[in-house]
Amino acid sequence: MNNLNLLLVKHNQMESERLLLRPITLNDAEDMFEYTSDEETTRFIYEQHKDLEQTKNLIANYFVKEPIGKYAIVLRESNKMVGAIEFRVDDWNKSGDLGFTLNRHYWGKGYMTEAGKLILSLAFNVMGLERVFSAHEVKNSASGKVLDRLGMKCEGILRKNQMIKGQLVDSVHYSILKEEYLDS
Image 1 (cartoon, rainbow, N blue to C red):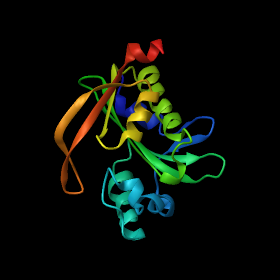
Image 2: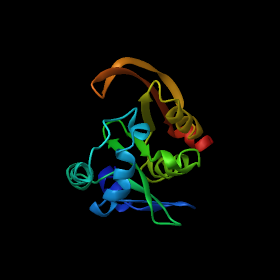
Image 3: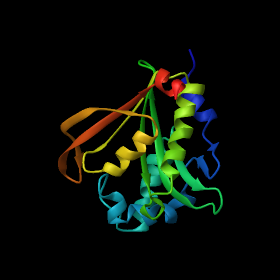
């Protein structure tokens, strides 16, 4: 059996036509602060950051401390970091959990779908996983559209199962199976 974390480490950088996925570093702090401090970008996920130091602490204590499966989404043309995509894997059931954030100034351009396709290819073609799943706050329909474009199917809604900004919210759950991915 493949060591899934080793495969994630070996694939800590991936490229598509317009994007580079790579580990997040402190050099990304200003670009990340641009979207973590934006109320619209963070509306469905976490409290917006108040200062650059808060973003640096997040990078150090979350992204750099445990970097496996956490990627900066970087525009190849400008080298600008515009978001983050995370992929957490479970050996015991050969599945992966996909999460993402994108600076709202880059919404509607297909970047998140492009980044998601890199992760799905890694999950199914390299890691041999059987299932990839994701969820979003029920009011965040834009994330649902990304998951639809990735070929994921809606599995249902879990009521009041996620705490966002001090409120229990409903979340919509999606997944795609290996055979569905390979058939698409």
